[in-house]
Length: 196
Image 1 (cartoon, one colour):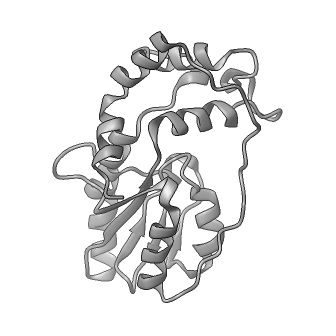
Image 2 (spheres, rainbow, N blue to C red):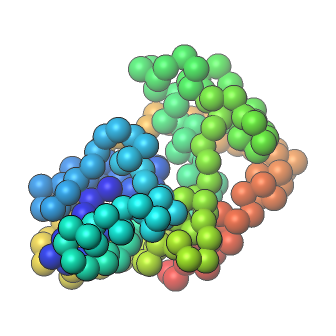
Image 3 (cartoon, rainbow, N blue to C red):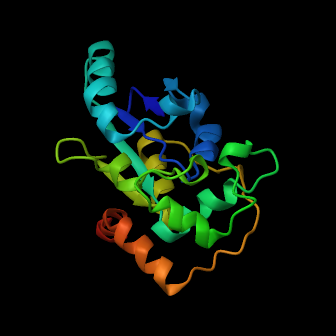
């Protein structure tokens, strides 16, 4: 999470949407930059609305506009799987011993194992009608997001290439693809309703 007080802007770092690269590029410009612990770095719209925005308002005297990225759900899921293929991933969350098919099937369960716990983007970005991210940009149109930030911050942004996941086979059977689309329907709806 990055707080830019003068611009009354907060970047909410949705997981698997280049948040580490954005922090690296803009952290030194932020009034407050929270990169750890992970739970605070990835503060979603609900906790921000309920806790952080009132706290920041009490300090700085104004409310903050929130901005974040949303990723195409299939691509987002593949990023989680590939990221957890890394050699240094803890055993409990490693996906090295499971196929993408199995990973997706388990991620769709109500109580997935640790390696398949990924949450969902709609709960992070749009958990309820009074707690939505103000401006959501599509990850696959990153240039629009960067242009928005450059206009607000008055700063040319070049993102470093960080946290690149290994390649992996991301094939799904039709049955598992259908299950995924049904289970993550709210994510597909959010992505589809986000202006291109």
